[in-house]
Length: 250
Image (cartoon, rainbow, N blue to C red; front, side, top):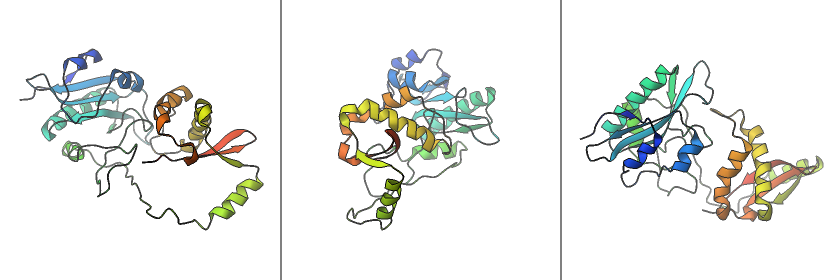
């Protein structure tokens, strides 16, 4: 049997409840980093979590004609538990002036966001979001609708050349832009340049919020061991990073 949704007065209370196997881990570091405004749980009679999530309404992405609230850190064992929790947290978001709820998103699109709704036949690749296949239905059962769609593509022939590549290289060379591979010995400095470029390149993206350079560097420093320098291209102009192409082996 499950209880009723509860708003945690202290996030440390999460530690008193065990999470079912297979749920994405949620550490104290994640919680502190993501800066949620509230945390909710739905425990069962055995003291195990049946559902959990966090809420954001103070610092959230813009959405035209709305004041959005965000639901993230989501996990639930059953559709009934998920729906009960989502109903409760939508009420709190409305009480805090939100006109629409967006999720799943751990505060911003810089963190984990969106559900995989069609996994296809290929295994998920590195950094791709992964979730149990029934979780999207928890949300639609609770009245949510899709706000945006994303897809990942697979290219099986890496020998294929884009006929536009040579002309593009000549064009940027004429402007004084040079290309090089990432310098792993200067990884922190390289992240500074990538952070600056990302802020400019992504600022018109849907649901974009700014991520400060220190947070960016701390987040992406975690994948340093997975980085192969020869797979990361940096574009520079007058010793300033003006572009990058980031790839990792899977």
